Image (tube, rainbow, N blue to C red; front, side, top):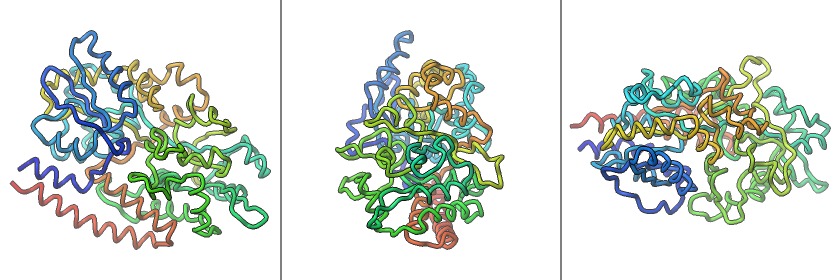
Length: 464
């Protein structure tokens, strides 16, 4: 009965992983004598297999990697008799949900036994994996951080200093207005900034405004003042636009929004989908508008600043990147950011936990962290790995490395209901910004619905 109850409880939060495409391939059956690694991400499965095979060379213990595993298949395997040994998730969103059902091996004893140096791991990414009682249930294996990008040429054309980005959230609003242009016929041709495009950044704004949407350690949503302030701050950027003309402009450089693609049509993409996959054949991902000079500012991750990023496009973009600015009344919040990214855990039902722990320790070594981060356009979560010339030699990447190391870097909230709460917030944000919804009413309605679902889920957990 436990397997059934696990699936019922977690069914409300499981969605297809951001890095899983329509066809995820067959799943290798876990077996003894092999360390089976399942990953919900991995556009280049050969690269990940080749990297982890290096563990086998001195240990003589084969590693078998299965990538792009669907979340529902992973859940079924973790709750079954033959789970994989090690799991790599594209984010920490589901770890707490798995842990609540006893599907995750406690890592603290294995961290001590294998000598993993947690002091070498940046606190913010490490915080994603810590339970409320500070137990370690996973480990970060690279991370993503967002920052503000601006087009220097468009700034200069608008009479703004191209070397000076907005210094406050209030100035962001002012700059966005100056950078929005229409032609002689009044047609919208350029927008200054859209705060929820290509994906939601509501958690970043709420953090910058002094709080978050979550209460009780992330167990519930609430209409907190910082959350409301974040939604209302975003609203300002949509004043003065006709919704149809704005949609037409956005769709012109991001046609997946109006395509018939089974996975992507009408959806804002996650950060992983945006930069590590090609949702449509012409490869116009949401950053295309920034590349084409039709969006003057955007919030995006470190992959845009890397060796294959904006400065290497056709044509290259003359851009700058800096931390997202704080509100003018709180300069002490400068450098606030939200840290996300891949995490690794050992399945509670792993056949050979010692071998799995040894592989995990090897994966957390600075050399391998650096290899994985560089190959997948991630930031290395190891302080030692971050000193690697491959990261330090790219000036714009240092902006993100500095943000990750700051005290104002915050781990993404991870609870047993994180996935569902995040999706609910996206729906609220969409209705508030694009349909004129009342944020207080919507948050209150959502909370009432979540309470009902939570009670139903817990009733399954309590049954024999």
